[in-house]
Image (tube, rainbow, N blue to C red; front, side, top):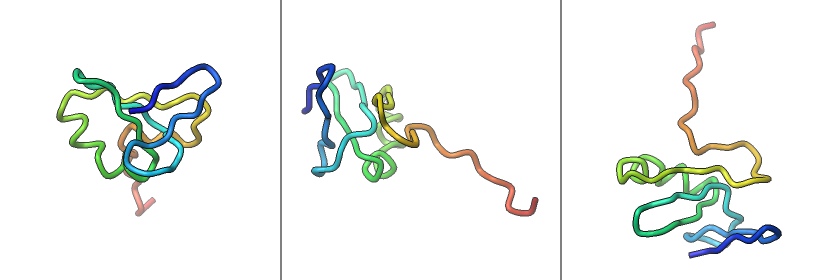
Length: 72
């Protein structure tokens, strides 16, 4: 598990990439890169995790993308 200070960079708990999202769970926090939050987002939300996009993170993806109408 990572700890984030004011000038610190958090890293994903699944790989060495920079963390983009923090998942706050009753048992503690986990940090995820863009790739791994996409993979685990649904299960984390089902478990009651609060997903927070970390400061300085580009293109927040903690929320599901809005479907586009491809016919338009």
